Image: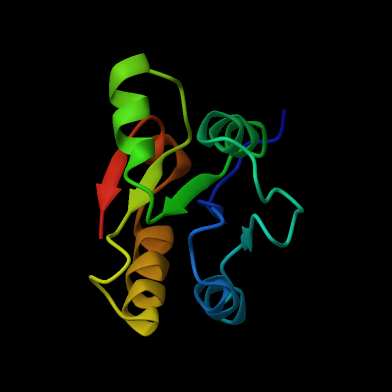
Length: 114
């Protein structure tokens, strides 16, 4: 299996697609649930899909945090920010910084708060 050298960002359906588009324009491999037709999946299904794609989930949904803590489910990382906490531009800047400074191995089974 080919080793992935960079973090890929998968935004769940709660994330504004403008964040994903901004990341793409800045060279980040990113996509949304809308892009892939994954709207309506349960959180567990979203997490499983992201794991299959070896992508870190970006979400505003704090249910992911409790789900992972309670079940110890394997994942490729979760980045969480409260929906009203940061602007779209600030989310893009911080996510790009994470992608540029962290490896997929460092994100594995890790939760980051923006």
